[in-house]
Length: 200
Image (cartoon, rainbow, N blue to C red):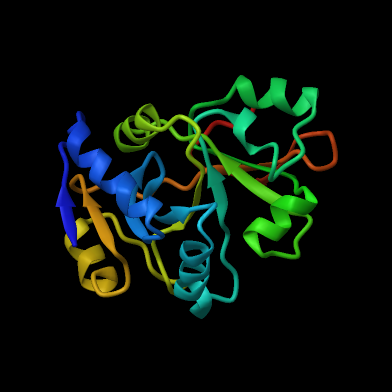
């Protein structure tokens, strides 16, 4: 299914429909401040498994938790005071923070890694989504299933993902602007990848 939303002011009733798809375990393609992303409800086991299955063709893929407020990720990640103060200066925006994962977080996400990524984007769609449900937690990754792919146009995305996902949120072309990835695992910020967000 493909759902067209206003690119700057997405209609609340349509965003509610997207939220309902997420809550039923659906996998959705949607726009963020770094381009189109693939995601699901992080607390829905069926959705998480389907998202992992979609990305299986990639040897390396990165997923992150997308939230409105970092206080809701404490079940998944350890956020000490220094990390919290550092992140608050940069969000919302095009950053992914790598944090130590909690035992429960690894169990919920079904991963063995000791870290988890966290995102707090600033985009019309995600802002509207979190306005409807501030405590919602998405598991998110770039909208591609092969290493060499990069999509900014909804028509191209629909051709590739239309039969693989439950919904494509079409808000027009969105440029691919990778996030800046910052690790806060060691206590001192480390730049893993320079992206759109300026490095502090």
